[in-house]
Image (cartoon, rainbow, N blue to C red; front, side):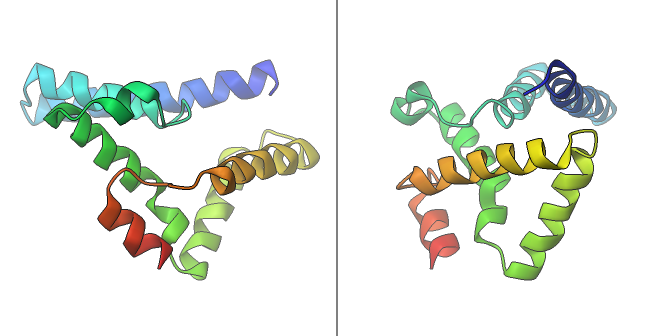
Length: 130
């Protein structure tokens, strides 16, 4: 991934975090909740799964599991919804050359295919892989 691409992905994450901070303050959300959601947003761009998240059964970790499951739920959507999503991803990465984008997107999709379990919650796993 080029330095420019990494910078833009990081910027997208930072923009999402800033938007949530503003929303959280406007809604007068608890600082701990704001911090947890910011952590969850950060996880969506960092490969999702860690051993720590898998072994931690606390309520906080379960919230993170659900958040990550919802983030990936598009993988279990119908083909039309997924096509719309895929087009939006391509638009988001329009600054990346077509060949590089296709290579990197294929790599990401292969990584998903290599996983035996895509979701933390077995109900979500069953619903989206049925």
